[in-house]
Length: 146
Length: 151
Picture 1 (tube, rainbow over the protein chains, first blue to last red):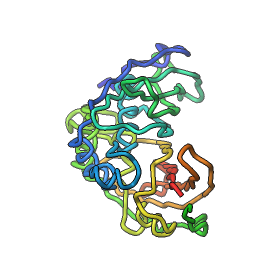
Picture 2 (picture 1 turned 90 degrees about the vertical axis):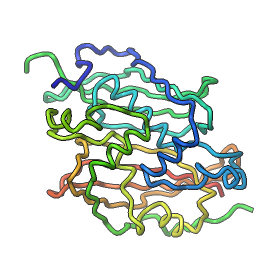
Picture 3 (picture 1 turned 45 degrees about the vertical axis):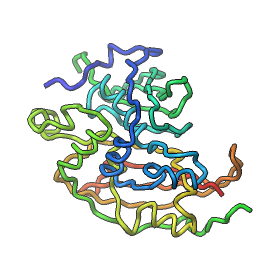
Picture 4 (picture 1 turned 90 degrees about the horizontal axis):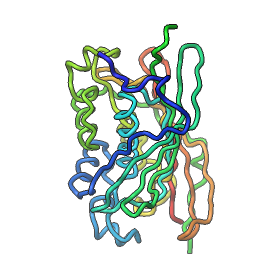
């Protein structure tokens, strides 16, 4: 079965990946992510706790948004292609926010039959404010005979 | 009055711990993100794949925890309360996908701690690295976490 949706030769520097829209974020998703990830920090569950901590209320796990960014990459290139993903959590994602994940190809390189594309990736909320910024490296299949 | 963090944590190596990945945990994690990729969820798609099984999504290794080494342990070592911490940055270097049924060894150490002035006051940045190896001691995933402490 073919798992890569794009081949190395199909990609050009400057290409943007299809944006992935997620949300609106609901409390139940944060509770579900807490259970699945093991991160039970009450700051993502308990509004009173989050206010007392000076955070102005509950906000989403940064790792949930990073999971969205990873999904945008694998929806485009296929599962198992991500070799490196590094992000900074630049802003808080609140309940009812929508998150749109985007990426743009910066560099292509090939070495010993391994074909890599490096992308800048980011996620923004409904106001266009960046909530995640970072970089990713993906290994893509080649259509050319080796 | 800003709080002090215990700088002695730099260089601390946490006790290694083993994790055996349960198939259901991979699916639960993918569904929690809302990522319904069949390579994470469908056993028959997994069997027919190059990995001969389902694989874990790229950020799955964040679920590897143990009482003695999780961020709660780090917070105790730093001497700070959980309400003061934020996740600043996170990086995964993935040499190959994690798969169910395999047992992996996790080794975490604190590699750096620095302070900076943030928008809302002074902050400490604690950098941890976790190396995840397989049963042949080959590196599979490396994680780099940066935790921000509001001082």
